[in-house]
Length: 454
Image 1 (spheres, rainbow, N blue to C red):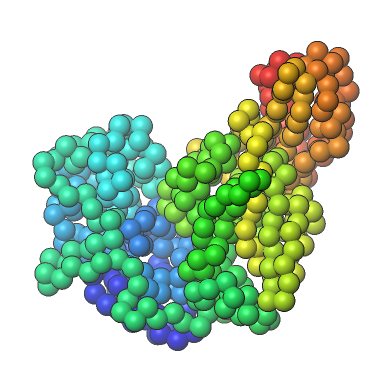
Image 2 (cartoon, rainbow, N blue to C red):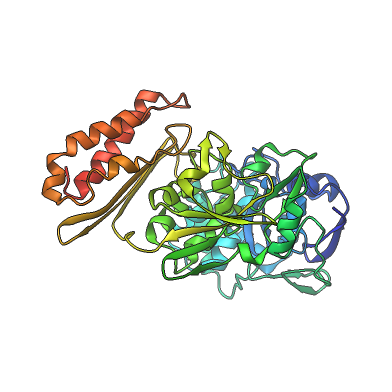
């Protein structure tokens, strides 16, 4: 792949090793920056958190090739700033540190939170550190410490505004590309270049990497897509909101074009560090029935724009999934855009059942949309995730209610419920099949009841 140039703690840095290596491992093994702790290697604990391009991310889920041209800040670099001093004093003043293993990641999460929201509430602080686990101190003192730091006078919470101050050298380096804007050959900066490279057998497309890097393979050869501008845009036309497949969940949440149903799903998808890295295209391409954003695209009957170097096709997302972890994506294709219909999404219902709020993989998820005009059901759509090999989208059954008045729908609701019940056949999973079926039907019942059909 060639040398990887980036800024590390305010210094221009060149890495000549394996582009598929985890950033976490390179920081510890090659750069001897052991303040970045190795915990779960699955993005669950936050001990390995660093700041990349001004965003909190889990270094265990970042391949070295992804940091080409970016700015990486670890606790070693951040500890030389006045902002660290303010947090350090605040944490110490309320005894918010015990063993200290989680603290480097917790401190960087605190910085990113305060950079974006200088005066957070207690609830906002808890959300901001929700991806960082602490098993000794307890979170109340940490939340209190961050609140105290926020009140410290004159603290420029700006580390994540793409400027790192290296106080020992007095050097200030703006975030972004290194001089020369050099891209290695497997990190294309145009869609055309990406599609030509995609023709090469064995290349694995990667943008966020939050799924691929959980079982990182240093022998893998990745096609890094996060710099392809055509895959990073969120635009609209008369019919669709068009999401580039390399858009992160954080981008989706912040976009004024995003409907509330999609924002809500993305907010519940994971903690901030995962949302800052994970992408829509990756969430769809892995073929998982538990994929949170894919559930929303299924219930809205969205479409996918698939491209290879030689052709382009538009495919309904429901036709994209062929089975568990199996999709209709050809070996030379990329998911380039997701086309989300603009209309009929204001009245929605979304529930996700998981073990905990942040980072929970769905045990069961459900989404429903309903459009009623002049007392007539113009559209109803439901989708069930984490139940079967693929997301269940019973569109033929949903059509039983379309064109009916609410009163007429009530008369056939039992037939409708029974038909959907027959389509929910849970596969073996981490929780019992009977439990997941009961929860699915309860969520459907609640959706109908909320809208006056039950």
